[in-house]
Length: 84
Image 1 (cartoon, rainbow, N blue to C red):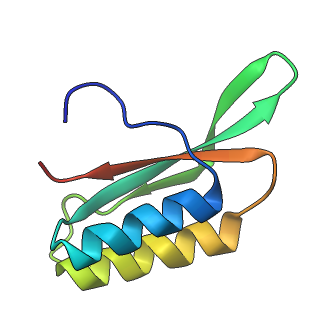
Image 2: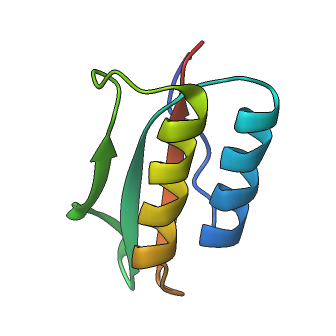
């Protein structure tokens, strides 16, 4: 992937994860950012990296979707990283 993926809401991240599963594209991880008055702030508690774990497309997607669901808040945006 060239550059960072777009930052999206939790609902959009889940839709993207589901589309990747349908298209057999493996999720590599998620980066969550908290929206603050000054802009956005990376949040280490909102990082998921499954890139080096032996998982199927479906397993990686399920873990990513569960992570977004568990951490979804109106003040959080997500980057969904996928395999090229």
